[in-house]
Image (cartoon, rainbow, N blue to C red; front, side, top):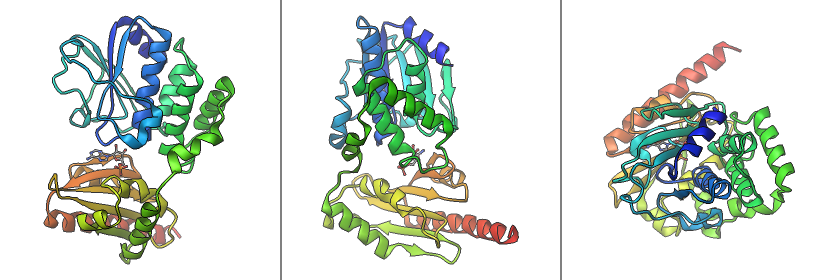
Length: 320
Ligand code: AMP
């Protein structure tokens, strides 16, 4: 795969790199790291990374604004997203070919080169693998972006997608670029007192069913009251791992402007991405997201997750 990806990159003069809407550090860092590596290796190529910028992620680098007509017939590389409707920043772009590199379960995007690796903890791990095993160049800044994406998506090497391969790749990244990795953590973990207090609100108000489903519906006025934003619940959801009474937990956040509820779901047992797919969502087996448009749908969603937890609880008891 690494050879095929490298060959395809070599073939094109113009390359547009894109990732999913509502980006997280893995999506942003993988996009910018790949762009910067291609620029460093092939200075004559026109390579851009597109999508809406997020000010709190500006450490990773600046994204590009493009004239889509100019990039007609480019190679489009999509990272960290399996679904064409969730690709950010490619409206009106007439690309010649699409190549996908992603660690989510495959959906509708079929790249002419299609590298999907669900065993990888992050897209940044895959890009690091590519850069470490091809002539594509790596420098300290690129390595620090990749390191942060890996640490963020694996939740500090905690989630089950973390493997021996993850540690091997991280070891090589650090060794090759003399990365001062402990100095990077503030870019991921620096946060406001408002956010810490909001986390307290979530802990105090999350309901937990007898079957082990933790859930909370967060009204927009609470988001306003705590001076946080609509992305904050998803940023905090991993902090609720390892609660003995909870096997699946979900945050349902009201987004008044878009008339939708943004949903984040996590699990440390039951597989949740199928339920997410019933509610305009998807994702990984133990980390998914969805979009819900009505109160009735919220009730149905909570009921479905609770049934999943009940089944899981019953199976766990009978296995004792
Ligand atoms: P989040 O809770 O927003 O961090 O999302 C967790 C995972 O679910 C990520 O891998 C997302 O890419 C995926 N995801 C989130 N929202 C959606 C959606 N509406 N459709 C498909 N996948 C999603």
